[in-house]
Each structure stands twice: as C-alpha cells, then as structure tokens.
Length: 55
Image 1 (cartoon, one colour):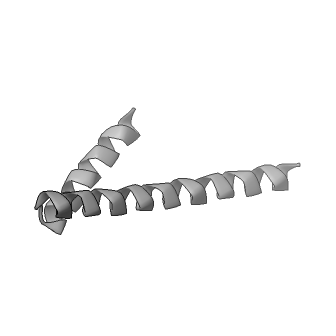
Image 2 (cartoon, helix red, strand yellow):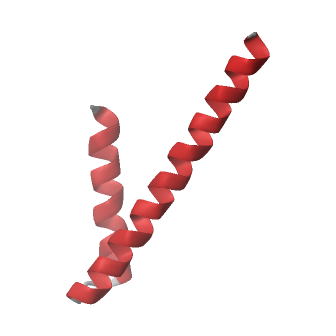
Image 3 (cartoon, rainbow, N blue to C red):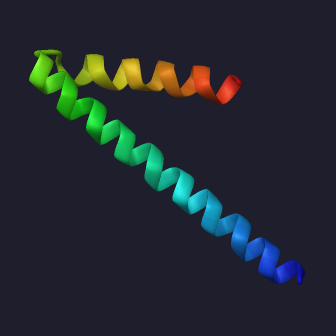
C-alpha cells in the first residue's frame, strides 16, 4: 500500500509541475501579445508562483 501512495504522490508532483509549466507558457504568450518582453513575463510569473506557494 505504501508503494501505491508513493506512486500517487509522484504522479501528483509531476502533474503539478506540468501544470506550472503550461501556465508559464500561457503567460509568455499573453505577454508577447500584450507587448511585454519575455524576461518581464518570466519575472512576473515567478512572483505570482511564489505568492501562490506561500498560501
């Protein structure tokens, strides 16, 4: 049973990481359309992620 839970935890972590990467790509695309540079977008995304992780 412990092995199953470890697998579930790993899958959850992988899914979370993929979702964060997807969100970052979406933010970059939106920023490019809005005229922001990619570096400004990444910094804004990091700040939002850090704020969300604190909650």
